[in-house]
Image 1: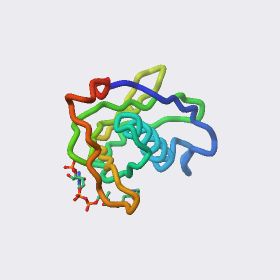
Image 2: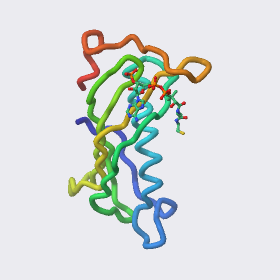
Image 3: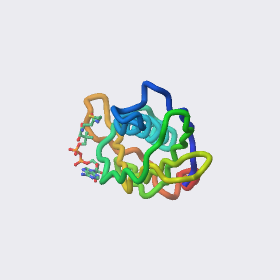
Length: 127
Ligand SMILES: CC(C)(COP(=O)(O)OP(=O)(O)OC[C@H]1O[C@@H](n2cnc3c(N)ncnc32)[C@H](O)[C@@H]1OP(=O)(O)O)[C@@H](O)C(=O)NCCC(=O)NCCS
């Protein structure tokens, strides 16, 4: 797994208990994973298809810095699948874990379209 973006937890990212709002975190993860899918598949025409069980392992507070990690899991005909872990940059405590996030390449009508990639022609995908 490689850790990409870092985020500073600010007041607008908090819930009623003044800890990190889960929805804010999921938005960041979806965006980060979408960018990863675009770069690996070489197209911006990807959509989020599936996000598996989400384990909110621990919380984060205002002022904490978190980092979003993504790992390649598998590639299909039209899809690509990643796992995700978000952790505190300094303590390395895990904040959230998601086993499977699937993106699908779509055509201009929004229908699944083969991305033409495989493990053989995607060396960088193992990063
Ligand atoms: C993405 C979308 C076009 C896929 O359509 P679909 O009819 O389910 O397509 P298919 O059944 O042909 O599946 C396409 C790929 O997704 C995979 N897939 C489908 N359902 C899946 C699921 N529940 N979990 C994991 N992968 C799944 C299939 O295995 C297939 O992968 P492959 O071609 O690599 O083998 C359609 O579901 C859609 O438009 N969804 C909305 C996407 C969107 O707007 N996302 C933004 C957030 S709302």
